[in-house]
Length: 462
Image 1 (cartoon, rainbow, N blue to C red):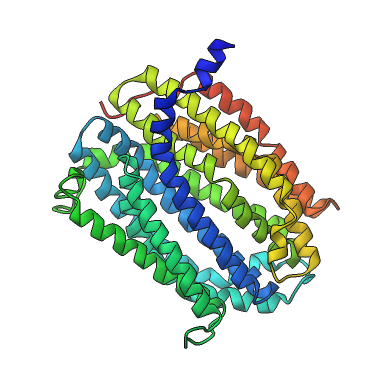
Image 2 (tube, helix red, strand yellow):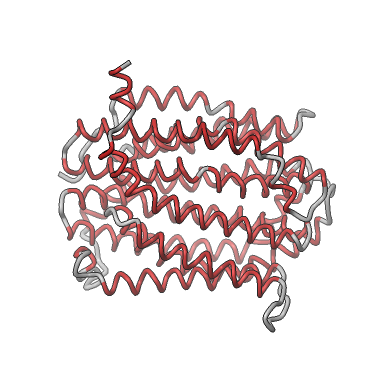
């Protein structure tokens, strides 16, 4: 018992270090998701069609977010290890590479959304019209999309700086910028959606405009801070004196990072395909799932932050060559993530019926949302273990393994299960949702084996 406790339970110094990194991330994510909830509720007051149209576009935007996250965090493995090895020029080269990669992702995404936006939204409106007007939902989605596209350049530049700061252990500044952004978003949502303080009532277009302005505020805060703190964060000194990256590093970054970019892209597409499969059961399911996902994002902030902590702390120990410490820290962070998710999941299950009542929608959509929230709560410990395992394997540069472990499984197993059960059985949407989650226990076994074999314990910068 003593050995088990020492393996999975840390001392005071460990938790001080862990929460020094994770707590600011939790605060930022909590505020971001809480404001997202309020934003969602405000849009939900407009009606089921408006809420569903916005939810569909945000599901498509999620693909862009994940592509950006995957592209930047792929080379971020090197950033964390370069920083742990005290190599400022290495950090600068990863920054320049991320700048180019983010620009390419943004340009391609804008082109796809402009050219195929209507068709992509229409994919989610192939089910029954039970719960609302499908054509009205499509039009509201297009109105929202036409404005929200202006946000993408701000996301690119903000994440370029924020990802670098986090990988170098600075999590407070991204938190502050995020807090300012989400509070701005909340205020602007209120006056632009409903036409307060002399502003016109803009509805879904107002919700989109509020988000765009808030993202540019976040970008401005991060850029100003980085400019004034180059003295202490020396890797920003001269970071743009050149925009070129040495060829041999481009090759290394590409080989290591591309599987993560592809993984996050496929995984986000897989999530979009799962949502589309559930939407076959009608507009009530689209609305219910949107409510459930918004609530779930608030409750899962603890284990999400644990995954970020693994990437930062374990990555830095690997870069410094201290494999024994990296292993010990990783065990304790994963245990903390799983145990906290058991507590949080229990609270989420107990309160699952309360949150859908905040939305101005019909009883069927509320019931669907409640059932989806219950499923998410039950499987939260599983999600916590998989999330931390993913970031552990990735911290050592084993990106091809993470690709097979994550998105390959999603496309080959999860999506076909959802597709077959939603189209060829009479099972309820929440039951299908639960069975897709249950299949992830196969991944849990694989993840445990990979962690046990220490395939991730690798220094990739020396």
